[in-house]
Length: 215
Ligand SMILES: N[C@@H](CCC(=O)N[C@@H](CS)C(=O)NCC(=O)O)C(=O)O
Image (cartoon, rainbow, N blue to C red; front, side, top):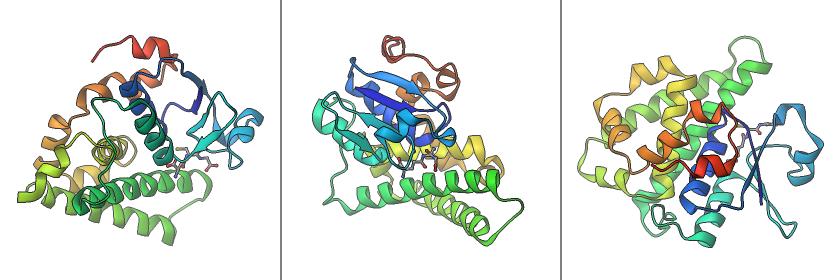
C-alpha cells in the first residue's frame, strides 16, 4: 500500500495520523510535490492531488476523508473511531473542521498563484475568523464534550487548528482564545500529532520509522 503525500499538507497529516493509529505497517510513504504533477501521482489520482492511497490490488483512493474512513473500517484502530452520522453534534464538528482545513489551504494556494487580495481570499479569511470565534464559544459551552471524543471529526479539528497556527498565524491569534488552547492541550490526539508533527514530517521519514516511535 502506498500513500502519496507531502510534508505540509494538513490533509496528508490527518491520513498519516490515521494510518499511524491503525498500525498499518505495510504502508509505504511516497513523498511528492503535487504541483509538479508527477506521472506516478497522476496515475493514482487523475487530479494529481494528495493525499492519495494506492492499494495493493490496484484500487486507488483519493480525498482524505474517504481514505481515513477506509482505514478506520479496515483496521479498526483502538484510539480512533468514525463519526457517528446520527449524532448531529459530531457531524457538525466534522463539517466545521473539514471546511476550515479546505478554506485555510485554498487561501494559501491562492496566494501562491494570484497576486494581491481578491474576493475569494477575503471571503476565506473572514470565514476562518468567524469559524474560530464560533469554535471558541462552543468549546466553552455545555456541549463541549463532543470535542474530546476520539473520533475523526476531532482529529480533523486538531490538525486544522494547527494548520491555522502554521499558515494563518494572525487570524489564529486574533480569534482563538483559552477554550481553543485548552482543546489543543487536551485533545485525544495530542500525542499522536506530536509524533506525526510538522517537524517530523519535514524530514520525510519512512512509515516504519514513524510507526516505531511510540506516543
Ligand atoms: N479535499 C481534498 C483536498 C486535498 C488537497 O487540497 N490537496 C492539496 C495539497 S494540501 C493538493 O494536492 N493540491 C494540488 C492541486 O490542487 O493541484 C482532501 O480532503 O484530500
